[in-house]
Amino acid sequence: MSTPQTAQIMVKNGTDAPALITLWHTNSDYPAETQTFDVAPQGTAGPMTVHFNTGLGSLTVQDWWAAKLVVESGPSAGVYFSNGSSASWKECQLRSDDAGQTITLTVDTGSFDIALTSGGCQTDMAPIAPPAQVDHVFVLMLENHSFDNIFAFSGIDGIQVADPSDVNKIGDQAYPVGSPAPDAMPTDPGHEFADVLEQLCGPGVTRTTPQELWTAYNQPIVNSGFAANYAVSTTEAPRVGPDLPTPAEIGDVMLCFDTQTQLPVIHALATNFAICDAWHSSLPGPTWPNRFFVHGASSGGWTDSPGALRIGDWDIGGFGYPSKASIYDRLTAANVGWRIYSDGFGIPQVAALKGVNLAHSGDFATFASDLQGPYPYGYTFIEPNYGDIIYNTYKGGSSQHPMDSMPAGEALIKKVYEGIRNSPLWERSLLIVVYDEHGGFYDSVPPGPATPPGDGAPEDTSINSGGFLFDWYGVRVPAVVVSPLIEKGKVDHTLYDHASVPATLEALWKFPYLTQRDRTANTVLPLLTLSTPRTDCPPTLPDPAPATAAPAAVPASPSDPLPDTGNVQGLLATLAKTDLEVSGGTPAEAAAIQARVAAIKTRGDLQAYQQEVNAKVQQARAANPGPNPGPASPQ
Image 1 (cartoon, rainbow, N blue to C red):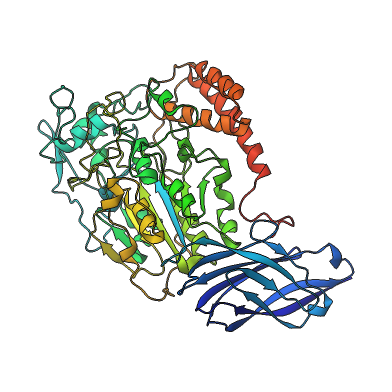
Image 2 (image 1 turned 90 degrees about the vertical axis):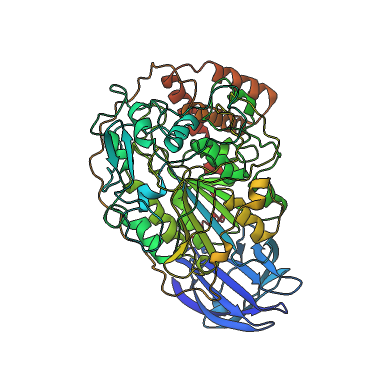
């Protein structure tokens, strides 16, 4: 019969510099155990109690160990992880001779010596990042809300926000800023380039004649066209009949959430950490080009959503930047690990990029548990579930799309924060929660001039309908920066855009910028003003507010032809790239996939293809379950 036992584990720092050492132990009969020690040069710290069984039946029980070493100074400064037989885990069995003993394990930059009384084991340590203020940066990017829409009625002191004196007019009809905003919109406000031009510069403003293209962005910017644009815009393919908001609904784009009661999760983050009231989308346009900026400080010349006539320019291998590099290429070259999570186990939008594939991505359902084990990734990008894209309702997602409801996105924010906060990574982590673009909702602060990427992107009106020079920021979006090294309740007026994400990573780990935009972008690192982590950071956030009844969205029909532009075209291209990846990538397979894609004419065709590719993805991910599987499935 097995006997429960314990041992006391001490950890020795085998380097000549101060170090933080995190030790993990897992035993198939017990939950995983972990502890972090601040250890002097050549010093020893502890103890950590580990649990295991001995006696009859214990031969089938396995013990696994992992270690993280952060050397804070000196020639060997950096972050190191153990390199065991399964990811970072090394099997080394505790036996009866170890019961009740005090055992010292030694960690240095080259090895992890598990010197058990019963006979030890050893494994290598591998560098995974240069020294920095934090070891792990997380970014969660949600969808389509302006800063005022989320925070104008939050009651947070010191932020620059709209008030009821801010008004848009259509003729003599005034639409003032007010609260509360509806939980979900009846139709999708316009946010293509032409929509945002009208929203910022006033009703009826266009940019289409040859004389206007490839010139400086329109002036003046007065933020007066949001209501007028919403009243007539169909660019986002809203509900099927009627396809425009009613007169009573037009003013919804001017309304703002009562944040404390409607959005308690992001309100709690904003008041416990740093809220940024000058974070702008990278260009005055829609989701896809703005998301390209967070990954590469450029949109490759795109200002509009993907279109069928130009999607082939990506080729089946994915979207490539003119600079030939994304932030993921820079991370890889600098030997900094990275990972992507997708809520709902779907295919993330970032998978449209060349060089990003399933080996880098995982199911968000395992996010919190992955962070409990050894997690050798410096950068993690998290995507929401976008809901029903194909049939145009966006229901069932967690992205906070305007036609979906807000609570599922609030739940995602809560899970992301709590997963990090209650992990061994917390004290040396940084989380940015930001929105890709404003979604057509009013904001009171005019955007200003921006540095063009200067990366050789083509001047091509098939992808850049307004002849835009990328010389102006887009509308303000909500952004909250979270770390125990940030003072509570910080209000940050620093100018940011999505290129501030790669700029932050570049400054943190000292690798080259991608374009002129991230070269000149501000980073969030100055917010990390505390020398020691705060101890008052909440371990949990409030529960999301209950969902209210959303407007009935009439879905498109399976027999409807695919639109020539929009999210469905981007989805189709991303599915084709992923299909090629999981199918093997041979020329014959590429030709077959291209033929398959060419045959997709309707929304029903796209749905069937999405189901095919998702099934292949599920099978591929089952064979590669994530960063901490271990042959014994450590818990």
